[in-house]
Image (cartoon, rainbow, N blue to C red; front, side, top):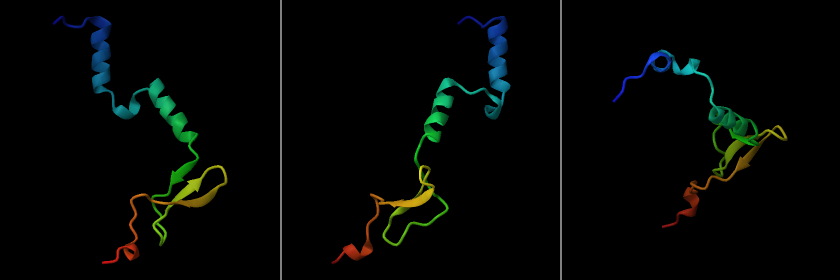
Length: 81
């Protein structure tokens, strides 16, 4: 295995000692941010689900809170032995 020379060695050392927060964004990072910004519904994590198990989301288009059904929710009243 050949050892890196000059600028490539400097680049490797710079990458190793640079904090993750201080590294420049890549095209994939920028695309991920664009996709996040263009998303319409954002789940509200600090708000409890409603009595029927629906989960609150904030609608960016209408600026209202909407509720969507949780596919993993099981209503205990539906379970009859």
